[in-house]
Length: 276
Ligand code: C2E
Ligand code: CA
Ligand code: CA
Ligand code: CA
Image 1: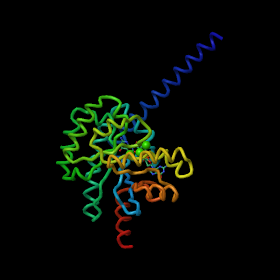
Image 2: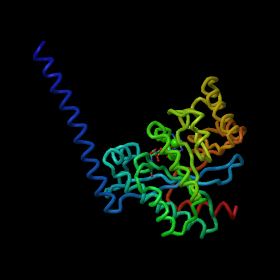
Image 3: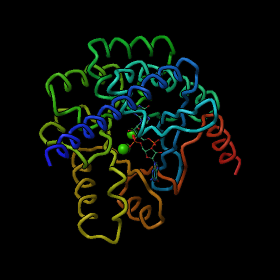
Image 4: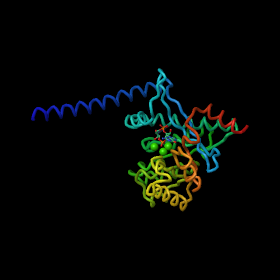
């Protein structure tokens, strides 16, 4: 039994080492991929309650040289723990500015949302970085929405709120992503310069048949209404979900309407919708 226990410990350590080595391997591959230009962006259109385009979210994509795709759920957490998300985040912001200018040029100006990781947000010179990228690209801050998660509110709330106000002064708008899944208190929400909340897609499965799930969505909608916030419901896959959310005045993002796609394809789609 003693030997078995020891073996158990050895196996456990081996598994942890394996996991750590696996992450390190991905981190190295990701750094290489970034240098080699294997990272790209897709954009997913959001629609208003009439189905008309109301903005788009940029989502990072990693396509290996052999054509296989690596899911963001796999590489974003690794980029966070290796610190690489800071460089990636700056690159995403530049991509967003360029995408906005291209959409504007094509006659389809619309607000663009980007995901900002807590580590990136907490960089001492983050506000300066944003200011510099805006100046360099000439994209209007008013057209950018920074999606942050409730995780940002766990530490240093005072600092977080101060920084949000500094960015808001530049014109940046803020959204709380995956709203309802984390920790947030109404008291803090009121102090933040918020523009919108995004209802997490995990709640959409329940709409409209499950009463308690629907009650959560209902309460988020009513809270947002009281605070005067835009609501974007993500993960809309069915007509029934769309009817319910549109009926409550929410904007929507989901496969029912538009999948994430490259910028060129998005512009084509918007052009052909104009002709229709
Ligand atoms: P997220 O910010 O919550 O992004 C929404 C995710 O939902 C995207 O997954 C999108 O493709 C997916 N989605 C959209 N509509 C539907 C739908 O109708 N049904 C379902 N089942 N899914 C839908 P994706 O692109 O795989 O990204 C996963 C996560 O990776 C994102 O979740 C975000 O947390 C992170 N991520 C992606 N790009 C970036 C980035 O540039 N920076 C940072 N920091 N994180 C990013
Ligand atoms: Ca997001
Ligand atoms: Ca989300
Ligand atoms: Ca999410």
